[in-house]
Length: 514
Image (cartoon, rainbow, N blue to C red):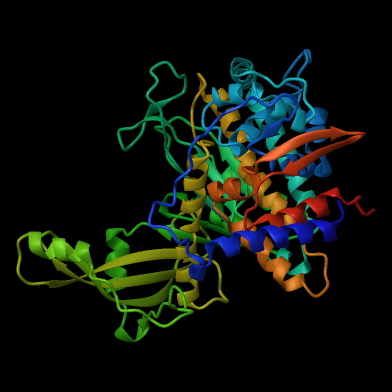
């Protein structure tokens, strides 16, 4: 079907649904809207359809990136391919997450779906037991190899980006807890929060949201353990890909002062790490002159595109006041800076101090009393203003959203029986999140009068939450038809994202340029 014919049908479907939803076309009936009756079910004889027609687009992306071939070329976990290859297993985990699978057992649903198998050209896919056994065959060398394979594909995707993309790579690092109720999972331990499970380390690229490194650790390990080694690998990856400057960001747990001089001496690495508020630093900052402090003015969170509306009542605040709970209110923020040399460093760096002026009312008190709190940020960035350093450090909170997305798609989950097998599961399932980012980055606008609109669509796709992405681009009812030498996905329903959907599919169907 030609692109013009597809666009014509999309417009017709959109106009048809908009006509039904017009407010001036309300049905002339007093009964309820949901009035279907005399419903019958039949079993189709020859027609096959799947709920997840978007999986074909993802598989096209995988084929164009050469991901399966790269996995089979470098990752050697199986001694015998009977009949599955390593790429079959890795993609099986990622595709399960993309098709709403939240457990290993959900793979069986895909395995019993004849239309799904036909859509991928597969005679069969691994069952949940075989998939779990594949995870248990991994050792650390295999895990490192798999991450390097992903790096190879990642660099291939990055090469298609404009020159501005390579100005700065902002790298965030953090740890997160993965709770498990199992009692026989090797490597788990009791965390500082009293939770049994694991404590994975994640390194992400703020520019695109990609997971650059994922390392599983016992639940009792400190957040910073092994972080420097992973950051060194990511620095080498980003520098080799052509990034001119690399910014490392982390909270107070990741200010590993023994490594700061080494990163600083590279010349192209900047860092912004939180610092603990020690008693000595607190006294030093208290002695700063008043002229050192400047008011911090934060930009508005958003600009209202319509007429401003009256604020709703703050119900939570009313409950706090009525119950006499402890109440802390922010009055103002000031920022200052000073030179500071950590004990393990030979260089002195900028210490940015954020002071929050508060009003505090303890429980059952009638009056508010003034208070203040300090937040310290250590950086070797000599060019940015102090308020910009604070804003950049605050932007690291976006990584919390990425962690929430990974928890939501169950990439941060421990369904297998030991530390390394669960690490393998996390790494292969997190590939689903990276595939979303690679889809947005690989299918760049083709130019022409719609270039700006297409760039905005790709940016929206890149920042889209995972479950929204699955609902818009994967959960697409499709009839699967094999005709001649073609495998046809015939879309059966319309949604508002199908214009972008067909543009992405069209770009993935084009032959690669040499």
